[in-house]
Length: 607
Image (cartoon, rainbow, N blue to C red; front, side, top):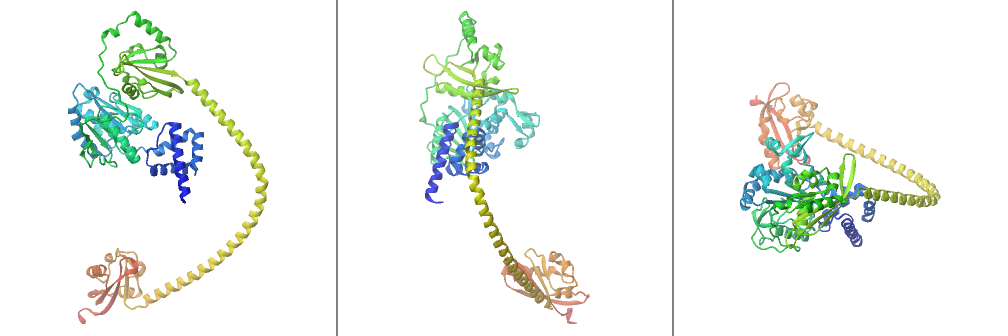
């Protein structure tokens, strides 16, 4: 490829990456270009596209192609307790220290970054449940599990896995933490509620903070050095003092000994060194929230009036206090999501609404700590055979500096608008396609006459090429007949030479199988060639004790030189005792084989 062609290809890839970022919010610009180029080229080849610009056109017209491309780039390879030795070290040495470092009244915070389809997050839940007991783990451990791949997150949220993906779990642990669901196994629901799944891009989004353990295995290897450095900065900021970082076998912290000390280089486990960390972005200070008194639950006239106003709002709304407890559910929320007044006072994470139609728990945490409103557009919710779409607004509510005292989550039903937009897009695409087809039809009609004229010329050329091809084939056949005759003559000559030798000539391959047995060997020992060819020489039963030849054969093979003669008492084909001289020569042309020359030198004992 020329330098200019290579430059155009590189620019085409960069343009495509920017388009993917702007169109779908997937920023792959920090990924290693060699990996990206290889995987995108593979997908382009499968789609029958050879140019980056053409592939961008395909992405613009085929929404499903985006999903296929992301699955090709984001290869999700994981399993429960994958790389058991590393997890065993984590369970034996790190988890007890994490538990000891966190006061009993505080929450143990864990983040599985790049969690793929969720096996790693559930492995962490099992590990802490085994260390603390299930009941204490439910009260103390919160696990955040994030990825950029929405399809992988959907599978992770379901908690369903095949029996094969759980092979690494002992049967008693599988029965303890999973329950059969058809042909699959479902992770136990009480622990599932302590695992919060959400979409998060570790190269762009703010990290989850105050972590005691951060697990990010075999994810950094896909990024270039600059992106890796930025991610490690975010991880360092996210970890509490003496918090632990668990990486994959393909990754390593290089030149970062000032901020991390190695617990196990081999298993890629590191501890954050004490010291201040400069945040990679502006972080608001964290202050303790004053607990809400019982008077907030008192049904006053003002509260009743406020509830009536909230119920009249056309959008579904749910409000939570700073502890994640539901304090308000309006009429639209009850109607859309099957909630009741009994759900007020329950932890929001216990409601299906917390993760469907979209994962809200991680977004609520993000909005709380960043003190800003977050929006999710077009969240999809399936109800039986019907699809609903909601725009979700997560709005922190503050009464002064510090963390918000409440969160209001509003769901605006945009199902009709989404369906109409999709229908308009479909009709527009059909019209554009029809217009393009009409244009191409005119062009095709204009070119048809030219093609018909050129077809006649091509047919004439084809006839000439066929005639030339026949002549070439005849010439090749003549050459092959001559070569075959030469080979037959050479073979007959060699067989005549070997057959005319009066002594027995036996050729053995490197694995001591008989490859040649001449007429002299037949006359000497009475075995026909078809009886011995391909057989192990030392397994043959005839008048010569073959075991007596092992040493001379090994000597010949080792030295690469002729060995012998060695005299061996034997019995010939007519039962007469003879002395047989055997000479062993290396057969270099047969990859370590040997040639044995056997000659009758008279009766045994000289009689």
